[in-house]
Image (cartoon, rainbow, N blue to C red; front, side, top):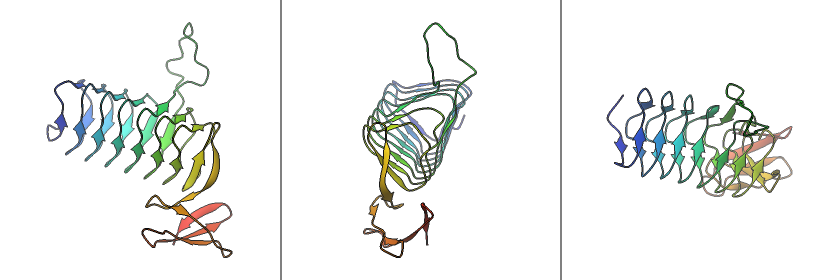
Amino acid sequence: MNKEYFVHETAVIDADCQIGEATKIWHFSHIMSGSTIGNNCNIGQNVVISPEVIVGNYVKIQNNVSLYTGVTCDDYVFLGPSCVFTNVINPRSAVNRRGKYSKTHVGEGATIGANATIVCGNDIGRYAFIGAGSVITKAVKPYALMVGNPARQVGWMSEYGSRLEFDMNNKAICSESNEEYELIDETVFKI
């Protein structure tokens, strides 16, 4: 295990997990065996990362988030406080469904807001933006802005995190970064 990362004295790091350089793991978090965390990540307080979870580089996980087996996060993902991931569609206390976990992939640069719920098996596209408290019940397109319960798409977001307003030619410019985007057949492309 690489020791060039920070772990608060109250955090628990099991054997046989991989943690990248310059990553910080804060109070009362638990990193379980078989999980992988990339470089330069910030793992907030009271976070649980279960076996076989893969977290990319530069990921920020805020307080009170549990990543269960079956979840993978690409680089630069932001997970807001108390957002929720599930790993079984039809849980019952009396029925053991280990080994039947559904997979959920969170694409590069995606943001999941505070208290949002991601129902397992629904992938989140690159740079998608899930509003606080939203409940994701279907796959999310790259750059999509999703809000509500169940979540519905209400627009598009830039890689910088600004809402995109497309003109009649299906072109948009990010108001903060001046990057250009194009909408073709309900798919956003950065130009």
